Amino acid sequence: QVQLVESGGGLVQAGGSLRLSCAASGSTFSSNRMGWYRQAPGKQRELVASITTGGSTNYADSLKGRFTISRDSGKNTVYLQMNSLKPDDTAVYYCNLYAYVYNYWGQGTQVTVSS
Image (tube, rainbow, N blue to C red; front, side, top):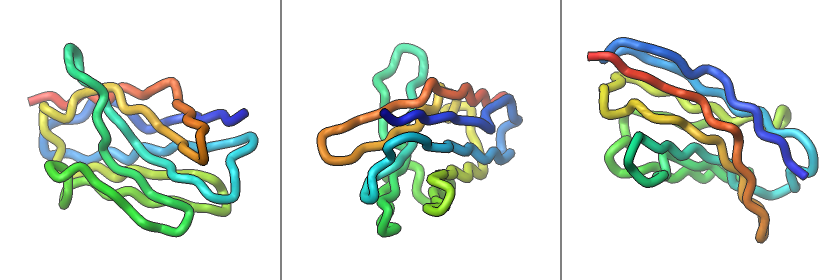
């Protein structure tokens, strides 16, 4: 089993920044892909960014340049640096770990961007 614990969400004004963290524990696998998804009210969950154990990253096209994903493999922790935040970025952000056929989710952290 894998446990994912997110932190760093909150309320920020438009143009501000937040940094989300996700710590993974348990059987995290030697090779995996960790990432962030988000879900706004009334919308489907969507990929924000992901990063593999090898460091390969993938971003939603609309977020490139504002969001940066990174990871500390030694700590099994993934980070999401979010800059120039917009009200449209308001959502619950979920941490995800995918390995082989296994797919795990965190409980989510709320990010609210006020105009």
